[in-house]
Image (tube, rainbow, N blue to C red; front, side):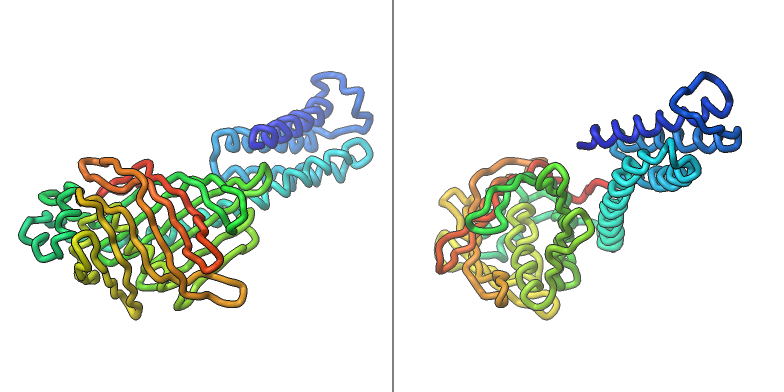
Length: 363
């Protein structure tokens, strides 16, 4: 679709050259019968150049392409009005391009918002990371100790910040179709929080932009269609609880966070432990289950499930389906997320971590 739109831009821009050629009598243009002055011809050339620049920026996937397209459309339409009889059909192309400009601006605005949030999120000066010493690990329940040793974090630097990339598929309703997506996430561990961003191509002309955030003990899920229309803007106590639980469950990707003082552990049996996380004004608990080798196999908790009539507290289960080492740390990199509803299980997310970096996030 991007290349098709670029083709429209390029052809529309080349047509504007006819006005320049006519004005300076560089060739005979039989399609144009009106006299075109040389000053007007210069403006026709400027419009062509702006459309060519827009085409180049779009092909190079520069998010600022719309900044060149907007003045190009304005100048083009002004010239069309002065030569209406012969150039009026160019208005159709300008309307199509203007619609693209609006969508491009919305996409750029959404990404700019997330970049601004990320800059603030990552602005905290962090102390030098401390090693995960065996003495510190021994303060945890035996089953959690075994997990940290199995994860190979003992002896390494404790994780303070995380940057990871994901791919997977999700369902928006139990009987819905699977929708593929890719996402990137930043986590802070010392002051727990995350910012998650995704871009989903629902169909050729429909893009969904999403950002989930947990910061300063508060959560917010924002989803926009085409970057313009809010499909969801969840916030409030139930969202705060849900994002805290998500943050707690996702320590499976950075196990040394199990040592943080905002998480309290209680061993339930030889293969499970209850973790209670308290941050800000919210406290929530979940159960981590392990296999005999010490690998984490699941995390389950009571989490708020959004419904039209209001959120209800339901069983929420994360199941680990695959393990892999990233930079010497063994994590559950593949997982599925399921709501255990009274009407039946609703597995809505299948996720894979494709890359993860500790204490060295991408810019």
